[in-house]
Image (tube, rainbow, N blue to C red; front, side):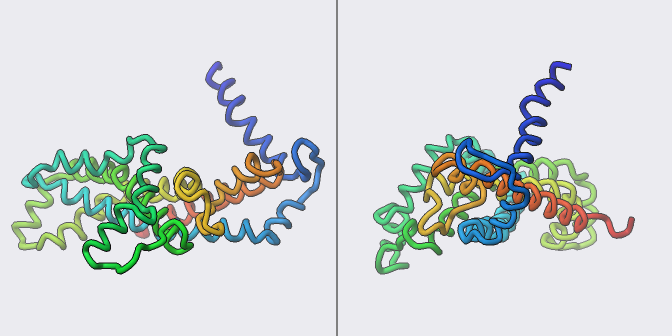
Length: 276
């Protein structure tokens, strides 16, 4: 009973209250019932459209890249003959447990105009002049995608690695005896065996990216020109940074809820065993 009371106070009640708030219009605490006015406002708000586009762009680019890298790293670390694999595993996973603020500050300094990334690229004669990473809309997106991928690849890698180590080794031995090459063993044995874990990591990575807030807020503050503004950061701005518009912010938050529900359902349907 105490757990149910706490769940109702801190989860169920806020969800229901935010749903009611999404039908309110006004500024600050001067709110009144506006029906579907906030939904109409969504279709006419260019900042919301930009934030939605940015969020979906991060989702479409970052999640596949991150999951593929995590799978490849896990496959490499699953090799018992790899020298120093404990060190590599720790190094890849370390960004996940690093302080987010410290991580973002270091990342921001790395991609500054005179940061180490530009200095290294110029020293290697890859570029002739510094790239404005944080001042150019395209490169700012690249920085955010790189930051998210760097931080969360190790997290997903741990799931894949744990699942790989639970696969019966006799299956690989039988395939090796039959002359199946390494790439075929990975593609036709490892990947199908990891199907439930791949579904799990895809869903949680999708949810996390749709709620993306920390990196855009701490590294670029949503700039330049809202190029890295996400839905979560826009909700924060509507609620706390500008003159509060709590009703409209609640409406934007339910856009994230709808997207999470639709994309999660599609991923479950895509992963469903078609032989069933």
